[in-house]
Length: 147
Image (cartoon, rainbow, N blue to C red; front, top):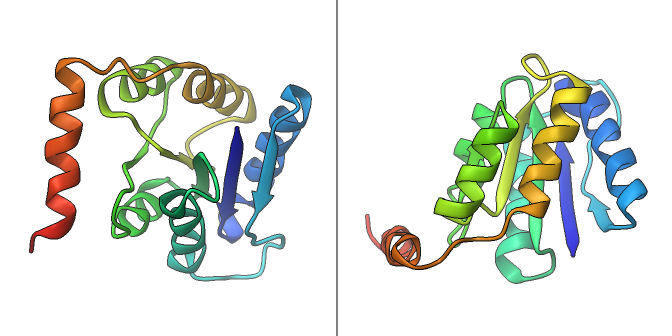
């Protein structure tokens, strides 16, 4: 599994904590930045990660900003992306099972590094359940082509 990572200035430290978890699991990742706390525009990083996932360059993505909300909004503009801000491991498990979430967004101002590790583990370890949920995800995907 290959993970695309991105963060704005508020999320750099938490993104680095996530990288340590990925390293410990032996997972490959591409860090699309940013790497410093100088102010940047989060949509730029959301787009890079979302495009990497949508194209198949990465299997899943993880984005970090202050709340995770802005990154999710921006990432969801890319066709094929299902991104959501997640604040608990239980929610991460459900959104993987039911919604086939492919981009996890985290809030650096709302989530500790320990919480993020549990959330990321659930995001990476939980398979999509398919079945009736597959039908619903297909309907979500069909919305990519509508206005």
